[in-house]
Amino acid sequence: MSTVIDRRGRLSEQAYETLRAMIVRGEMAPETRISEPELTQRLGISRTPLREALLRLAQDGLVSIYPQSGSFVAPIRLEEVEEAQFIREHLECAIIRQVAAGIDARGLAGLRSLLAQQQEASDLGDFERFYILDEALHAEFCALAGRKGVWRLIERSKVHMDRVRRLSLPIALQVPRLTAQHRAIVEAVGSGDATAAEAALRIHLREVFTTIDTLKLDRRAAPRSYPA
Image 1 (cartoon, rainbow, N blue to C red):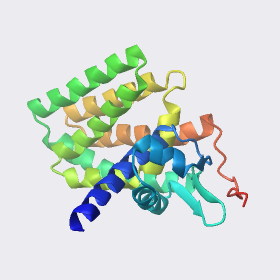
Image 2: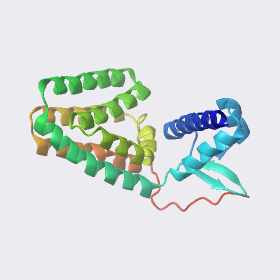
Image 3: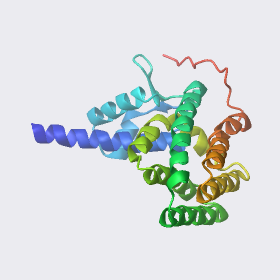
């Protein structure tokens, strides 16, 4: 029995990670109905691990479950985006000051290598690779500060922010703008100027608010009423 439970747990975890990524990437659009038969076939799993995954996604605020109507991809709720941005800014600004105060040549070379790869992805218009490298740069800041656990905390808290970030990447000049912001942060870190590094990071992390306005995401939108 324990083997069966362990296997079901692994399938549920895999389904959770796959669906979470699909929602964040926008492959499962906000407010669309979730078809359990379609997903069980697509993921190659039974309904039990799928439903366990959907319950976890509901706890994350990514899925809305209505007993009489079914499950839906949750809308992007801007209050949750703003809360995630608040958490991220406060944690990462403390991190970047530590990095600027203690960066060595090897650490700076690693950051500049990530910048070079981002520039290449930007030049190629490869949004998926750019996103991965964006995440890698911020994770590296935490690693250089000796705070990898802080990055894991940020990752868990910023999922709603990430949905907006993903939507922003195809906007004209958005990726070059983000690349330039990253470069400003790294150059301030390289000069050992913690105050300038923090200021550059704040500008970068507040870019999400510009994106909200550009995408015309409605801060006042009422919750959707789903049909029975």
